Structures are given as structure tokens and as C-alpha cells.
Image 1 (cartoon, rainbow over the protein chains, first blue to last red):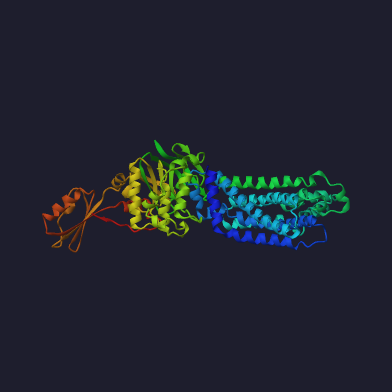
Image 2: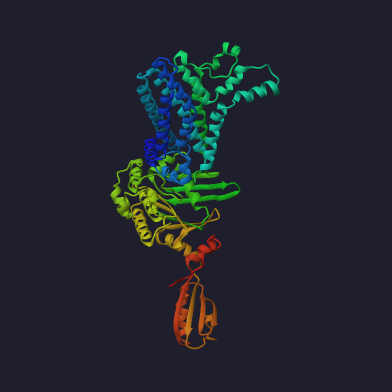
Length: 282
Length: 310
């Protein structure tokens, strides 16, 4: 019952604070525009409609983590900084209740935002192409929710470990740069390759480098999307030469993306929880 | 049975011991005033009782339960007015109270509580927009929910006007009369003096005195001072020969007499009145404030020593 007490109070306060409403509307508008500008290469409407979701995945990969971070980074740090936590813990709640209640509330909020964005994009797609590519739409929504949750989990974890707002910002924004921006430009694999080939002087191993890229939820999201795309839409996410593509090891298969998500959902939360349990709240 | 019991409780922040080797027992049903200047370790102790912070060493038990192992069970039976709280959520005063009642699984009536702390007219306003005093009253109302077995109040009079302080004092006396143990901290001696059965004085992380108010007063030694204004210069009266008079000095027409204890005052006045015309009598006793300042070495607030005119 006490998780419920934290959860419902937090949800009310997020809903009323209004800060996320603007973000939600903007995101939905951008998603709808994306679906609209997906101009045809004279493909059949169903294919076009499916492509619209492919384009959406590209957008979401970069934007949804930002939304998840904005929605979650102050979840627990805010209560600590303002002294709200003194009341949460003055009543029969434990630190675990606070942690779980906050996590569930923010997961719910971000899920609702993602869902709203999908409704907007789907409405535009259906209006424009006259078809509803149900398989791709539902599949992309599912992997997008997983992707969004990893960033909510990471942000709540950072928030539970950070005593001040600036620490929480540093931790979450830092994570975003490393996990998303870094993988948009050059990738982990390039650093690993440098160390592996040049510094250590070992035989080149492109699959190993790719495995490091795969550790990023951003890359995992692109790979997970392949799971729900029709074969024609599947993309090769790793930057391989032809010969490396032929003999892909099992650990680089699309299914492994789910393992990557699971790790990002569990490990930061576990660490954040342990730190929060041990910290002095005052 | 002890409601609060700490043994060798120590909490360090870096090199500083905020609380050092504290052995404190608060008995069931008593009103315990926890006194000390700012930074003496009062709030740190309370934060340890509530498991907001963790001890460096030693143990804390509330209702015989370890504060770290059973925080939720303890919180079910405790009402808390914490220090450094914030009403930051966009909730109204009434909603905060309703949330607190629901969380405690209690059946208190929000209206009664709002009325008690005179917030009925402001119940629909956001608690974040309240003045400090109103927030303090709301927090106090929240602490009273579900008739707690132990009421912990950290600097309860902060921000309150005299009216609010009186209401709080009366309410504390009421709940104490019904058997609730009250543990409250303050740096205002008169506040503690008025309602406490026992007081503990903290200074620089250590408990320097624990006693009843009367016990403390006795331990001051009961020194009393008399100032007698006489019609003529009261020289060579030999008041020093009266038993119990420690010192006598003359300044103009005023004779100042220091007595070992208050009972000597009458003898001294009688002695002087038999020998000269006494125009006026001013009698003072050493107050608890003086004792408090002695115990806390003037305190960090440097509150001026003030004697109470009787």
C-alpha cells in the first residue's frame, strides 16, 4: 500500500506541474510531421506506411531518451533537495517504497507520452496512406517502450544516487552523450579498434568492436526494431565490411538487443537502489 | 518501558562528530525537551531516530525496535514534525493532509485537523504558497494523525506567531495527557520549561545534562540576589554576618546581597530592615537561562544572560 501512496502522490504532482505537457505536444507534432514528410519513392501504400515507422524509429532513438531524462532525473533528487522526502519517510513508507513508487510513476508518465506520440504518428500515417500497418506499428511501439524504459530506469537510478540537482543533471546528461550522441557520430567500436589493433597490436576483429557498440541502448534499439520490421525494411546497424557481415556471430543477432535492454533496466537500478538505501537523507 | 533508547550513538560527517557517544532514554508517556544551541546535534539525533540518516556507530531503538531495521513499523506509531521539510508538490493543504491520513491508514477527519491549526480558510490553496508559519502548522497537523504513541517535533515553534505557539503548546499538553510520549527539540528554553517533564541539554554533539526542570534548577545552586534600596547609605550594617549570605556590596544607596539559596533572602531583608529604612526591594534568582548558557558555554547563538525578576 505504501508504494501506492508514493506512486499516486507523485503521479498527481507530475500531472499538475505541467512541465511535461509541452514536451508531449511537441513530440507528438514532430512525430506526426515525420509521418507526413515520408515522401514516397512510388512504393505501394502499405510499404510507405511501414517506412513512416522506420523514419519514426530514427527520430525516437535520439528524442525519447531526452524526454525520459527530463521526466525522471529529479524524481528522487528533487524530494531530497526540497525536503519533501522528510514527509514521505515520516509516514509508514520505506526507502524501497519511495524508490519503487517513483520508478513506477515515471515509467507510467513516459509510457503515456510515447503512446500519445504514436497515436499522433499513426493518425497521420493512416490519413496519408489509407492503410494501418498494424504489425509494424505495434511492434515499433513495443520496442520503443522498452527503449524509453531503459532511460527512465537509468535516470531514476541516477536520481536516487544524486543528492543535488546538479549531480543528477551531470549523471543523466552525461549518460545521454555517451550512450546516444557518441553512437550517432563515431562509435565505441572505433575506440576499441584503436586500442585493440594499434596499441595492443592484435589481429583485427570487427565483431568484437561491434559488440561494444551493441552495449549502447541506442544501437540495441535499432537492432530491436529489426525484430519487428518486415524483412525488406531490416537494416544493418553495425558498420561492417561485406566479409564481416557474412559470418555474424550469435551475440550480434537482433534478439540480443532484448538482453541489452534487460541489462540496462536492471543494473543501474540495482546500483542506484543500493546507494539510496545507504545514503543520509537530510 | 523506554520509548526511545540510544546507546553509544555516534554520527560523524567527515571529521566532525555531529553526535558523540549519546546514551539517551526517553520513557513512555513523558514529555522530553531536547535543548541546545543550533548545531548542537539535536536534529542529527532526531534524523537518526527516524532513519533519515545512519549512525556511524552505536544503536537507536524506538519502541524497542531497531530504527534501521524496522523504519516502517516505527513510522506507523510515530507522528513527526521534521526539520528542513518542503511542501514542494503542487498539492493543496487539504490534499497533503488527506495523503498523510491515507498513507497512515487512519480515519482522522481533515476538517478537524485543519480547524485545530486554523487553516480551514486556506485549505484549498497550494501548500507550497503558504507562509512559513502556515506550513509549520500544516506539518504539525500532519504529525498528529492517527493518535501517535510518540510525537517527535523538531523545533516546532519555528516560524509560528504567539497564537500558533500557544495552540501547539496546548495540543502537546493534551496529547501528552492522553499518554503520548513527546520528544521535542528547541533552542528556546522557556518553551521547553513550560511543557517538559524532563529535559536533555545537548552541546557540540554531547548530552551535557539530563534532568527534570526542578532538578536542573536545584543544580544551579539556587543562588539568589537581593538589591535593597535604602534611605541612607547602608554602610557598616554587618549583613555579612547573617547565615547564608555570601556577599554584600554597597553602591550609593543600594545594598546588593548574594544569598546561598533563596530561603536566606527573608532573613537578610529582616536583618537590614531592623537597622535602616528600606525603600525598595528587588529580588532575583538565577534562571535556567543562565544554567543553559553555562552548560552550552554561551551557546553558538550567544544569547545574552537574562535573569528572571521574581
